[in-house]
Image (cartoon, rainbow, N blue to C red):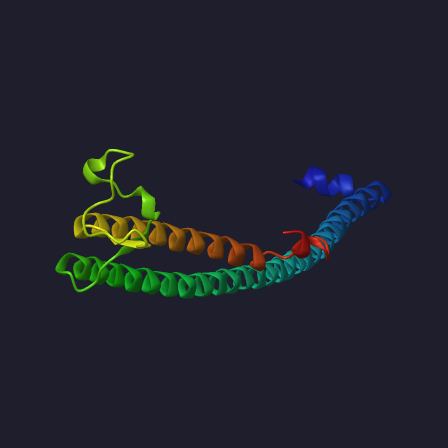
Length: 192
């Protein structure tokens, strides 16, 4: 160690000490610069993260608004369609009850079904060209249908009526669905 102290005595020692101090000072200054640069980068990153979080929040807000609008639109459609269906099913049930009542009245004889006939078409024994049935007025315009046939005809009419009502319900649903869609041009609704 004494050799080191003897070597540092004189101008060479001062120069070595100056170089050593300058190296330490440079290292400290470099570290400080890097630290300040890291602080600046951290501040930039924090600002970018904050801006990103704000943008994500705005996007989520817009998405939530769109979803809320879509849900409200869907609920509106479901409410209208539910009203249509409830009314249609009530009407179908009423028609079914009335049809059953009419068929029961036909079977009991309380109700009769008549058909219009051509007077010359009634023949004895079902053979064309024969004489008219006994006791039938040649001018008669109506004939009574057998109750079982009348019941079958009433059932057929009720089934056709039910099918027509179900078709109307289907058409009403489609019209309601189309009315909820926004037209792409002003004349689109008129063309449908």
